[in-house]
Length: 180
Image (cartoon, rainbow, N blue to C red; front, top):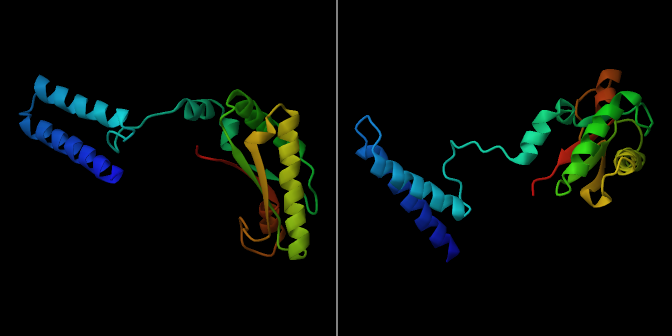
């Protein structure tokens, strides 16, 4: 039943926009602009996006765009290691700062391994890698409730291949922000 209400609202908004577009003769007609604005305002108060062309930047997106380190969401590890290398600490510090200042933000830390080792061993190593990143972020002040860690072991390689360059790309923890 609620689906029918959304459908009607969408239809009314679409018709209002079409009528406003057809009524225009090259200039701006105040009445059609008012009708269009009213339709957009009504759709926004109902939680429906006004149109796909409208690009709204949220506070969260603006904050993430302000720090380019937040674009880096992969931490790489050495062979058979779960220690954070020094070159990734600035990246993790930036994510920690963002998470502390945005307590509603949530991330999943995905631990991965290369293909060497047994399935069980790689799942455990992937978990240790994800948990290492999680502990680092908690020490930086992030609320543990914002963090979830999971291990995929060798099951989701970033790069296929059986050489050192492929293996190096697969030994990682990925930081994935979750939609609310």
